[in-house]
Length: 115
Image (cartoon, one colour):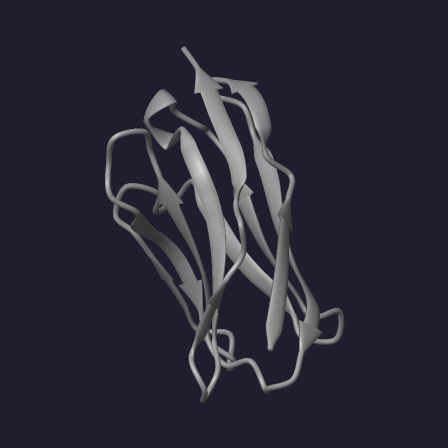
């Protein structure tokens, strides 16, 4: 079992910043890759950013240069620094972790960017 809790979402004006956190509150398995996904109303969930256990990162084109993903293996946590937010960044942001058993998801945190 792996349990994840996201936090840091909220309402922000366009151009603002938010920092999301994903805490691994329980993990019976070693966590490999971690990532952030988002789902806007009426749309499918999409990949936002990922970070490997060796700290290599990957970003969706839509967030490159604005978002930064990081992880703290000692604290068992992952972060997403989001700058220059746009209304199209609005959605529920969820973290996902990959283990050798399966992938685990958090419940998500709402991010709303007003224009």
